[in-house]
Length: 227
Picture 1: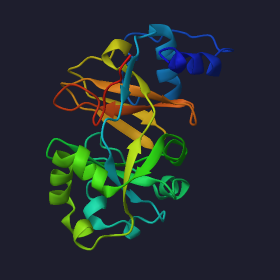
Picture 2 (picture 1 turned 90 degrees about the vertical axis):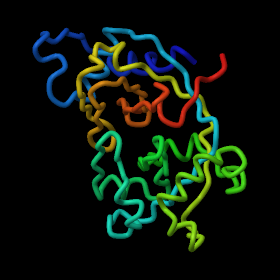
Picture 3 (picture 1 turned 45 degrees about the vertical axis):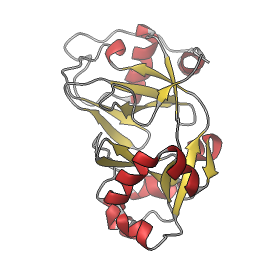
């Protein structure tokens, strides 16, 4: 499990020769998907395996039109890492869900890629969210009361079932005090200045995406997997 991430990246760039960028340009600007993979090969940072420990709510993606997304969800999309979604990306992920994630008391909703959703998530009952993730549910209900009030049929409970290998951005050489923006499968994501973040290799897209951290320093909505 701990070697899966870099087996994939090594296979992707097995025919390429990695050339170290100069110090001035190494971390400036938007970090491209190819640069991140090459940097991971060069740095070979330690991996950490996390897993979702409690079910959450998602909202079904049924259209690529932003106006079809309830405003109460739309206004919180990509809040933490400043992700900007496109209609084309939404269209590609019809049949998946917007993950209705909470970062402390703040809503931070995001798109779960359809390939990831189909392979790694399972539907559960809403009662399980209340039983196993009651604190989360209370905070979410304050953010999107309209969805619960009308028992919206697109509101579904889901649980990510598989462990996820991640690497710390600080172990890749990115300074904690620096704001860093990367190219991800759905656009751009940003690590705020003053904190770390994690990178996950998406094998279906052959590139990394970012998971920012919560107040506990762990990737949002994850806990360490038991080894």
